[in-house]
Length: 163
Image (tube, rainbow, N blue to C red):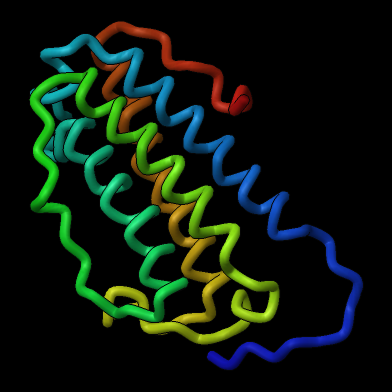
């Protein structure tokens, strides 16, 4: 697939895209908070990973991916380095990565969003498509968390309340 830059009016700024993504991250953080400690790390449905593992995946993508994009480093994806055992530890790392995302996102020029980049040495797409994937992946996994919470008899946060 080839992406061609076209002179059109911009419908969204990079700041608005970051705000959109951070809104999703805020909601996912609230889903993490909604889980009882034990179930966060142990409960699953149909052989899927517990929600803590899904959150670790999201933590291992956002900040490291943006750092790789900014530094033009195609280092392989790795989620092995962070193995939380408590909700507090998971939330602390979530918040730290939110700041990493803010820092590196702000270093991507408008032109770079259109550049093709081989993310993690595996995913060769324009930068903006990689970022949209991060958001899509988070929504997908958060949906799994909603199913888990409902299976536990708990009401998840409203999906439209992102801030």
